Amino acid sequence: MMTETERRTLEERFHTIKAQIAAAAQKAGRDPEEILLVAATKMNDAERVQAAISMGLSACGENRVQELLEKYEQNAYEGADLQFIGTLQTNKVKYLIGKVSLIQSVGSIKLAECIAKEAKKREICQDILLEVNIGREAAKSGFLPEDLQTALETLPNLPNIHIRGLMAIPPIATEGQKSSRYFTEMQQLFVDISTKKYDNVSMDYLSMGMTIDFEQAIAYGANIVRVGTGIFGYRPYAQTTSVLGDLK
Ligand SMILES: *Cc1c(COP(=O)(O)O)cnc(C)c1O
Image 1 (tube, rainbow, N blue to C red):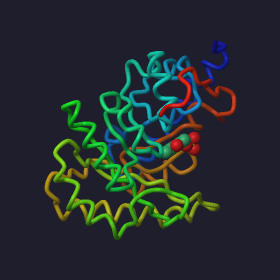
Image 2 (image 1 turned 90 degrees about the vertical axis):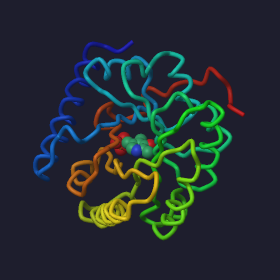
Image 3 (image 1 turned 180 degrees about the vertical axis):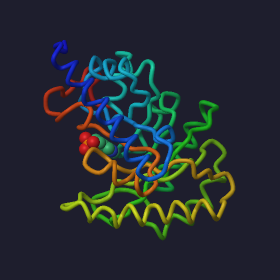
Image 4 (image 1 turned 135 degrees about the vertical axis):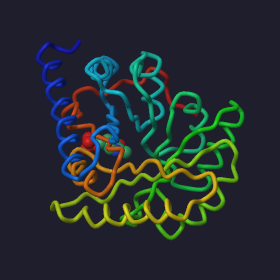
């Protein structure tokens, strides 16, 4: 159970982040309403997630399928939109379809095809974002910028997915200046693709920025920011234990 102090701390953090988002938007000459805060809820239990929703949180992003399913069973996300933001293996796609409004982290043609196949089975259209490996990091997934065009030309032929924008997790910056380079590159890609008007592609969302850099991301056009630590605090305390066993 959360203590009263924990609840109050969560509420303060949540409202601080909301205020910082609004201020960053205003500074960039943008309407705060157009920026969606997706709370990265990993390792925070259902009670904490529900507490944040009761305070006005409108969207949750989970990054592990198994944890999402466990918390989904506990009604952790009730009252909010649920999105997937983490690395996704094709064999786990089937568990997500029908539960999440948006899969932000689609970094390969193969994964997109698998999502389309599972969405077809359920007779729905799944919204996705294309993840861009903007820092060209070997350890990270995502399309390299030069591979995006092929993806944007071929994927819209799949009837059960709809590309709604781009997402990136730039390399961790050591000083404030460094991630601005990647944010600039993402903003340029986003604008270029919007201008080209690919069939059945809607460049509605640019998802970038986390606790350390969401204000900067907003300055470069982000309209989805994914914030975990800034809302829930550091994560070690609330590791959820697996009740389902390993997913196959
Ligand atoms: C955890 C996570 C975040 C948020 O990270 P914080 O530094 O805790 O704000 C954002 N995006 C993804 C994909 C994440 O997994």
